[in-house]
Length: 274
Image (cartoon, rainbow, N blue to C red; front, side, top):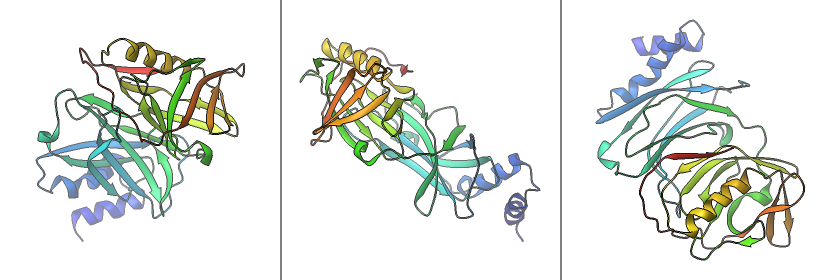
């Protein structure tokens, strides 16, 4: 039996330290001859219930474009060995990175195609691979209601219509992952919904200087999202209400899949909305 096979068997039996199990998981890709290898850990937060056929995926995405889906630059999928922390090795090409672009690490665990765990907060960096390689995943307890899933155009913030000069939209995935733009920068985050209640988790994204209405509108979108407590449908519109029942965001199905948002970049940092 090879050293790697012995190590994996010991991990499965629970007699090998987590650190060595992580090293075993790294071994194959570390010998792949790729130009650069990012190594790190995926750690489960909360309930741990991994079936024997679970598969863990770690992705490195370019999340720079506000008007388009993220682009996955590198991905590794493997069977998690251990119980709570799992080592990964992700090969990538440094030449693929562009100055000013934002890159994010994320992870998920699936079994038979069913999503079990997901990273709810992306690890981000500008122009390079994120230096922090530890990714925390949490159990997916409740998927979003079907009515919420999809691409939504933000029509109004409170009673004020959004500007045609600053197209804004939100995309809700079934697992609660949120992406979109408030009119200037790309946003990423997570949304939770149970019945008619709905809350946004921290929303992260680039903070680029934009002219006029783009910036003021985006600030208003972030502020409104932090107040949302419930959702309801009114004909073909999605209404997101605050604790008093007042509508703070009005959305409609986005048939175009997003709109380009031209920006003038002066500085970049991560912004968060609680």
